[in-house]
Image 1 (cartoon, helix red, strand yellow):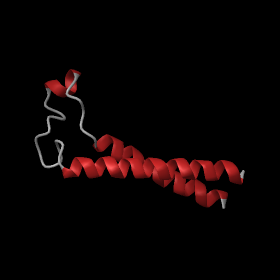
Image 2 (tube, rainbow, N blue to C red):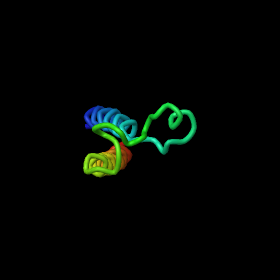
Image 3 (cartoon, helix red, strand yellow):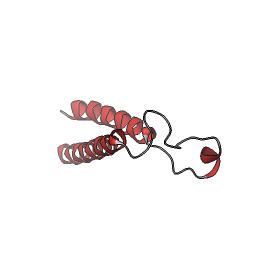
Image 4 (tube, one colour):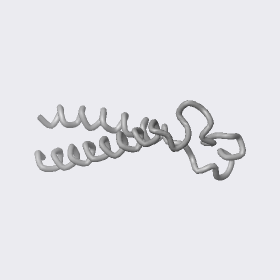
Length: 75
């Protein structure tokens, strides 16, 4: 059971990292100077895609937390 939870934890971690990296920046520093996170493009801005990305990120963060608690209880 512990091995299964550990594999699931790794999968949740990889997906969560990917989702966080998909978020646009705040246009600060060098990323703003080069046009990263300007909201121009098919995934930028405050569109429905951005709202759904926020929802998926929160959902996977909650799943990651619940799996962490399960892993602590099984040891």
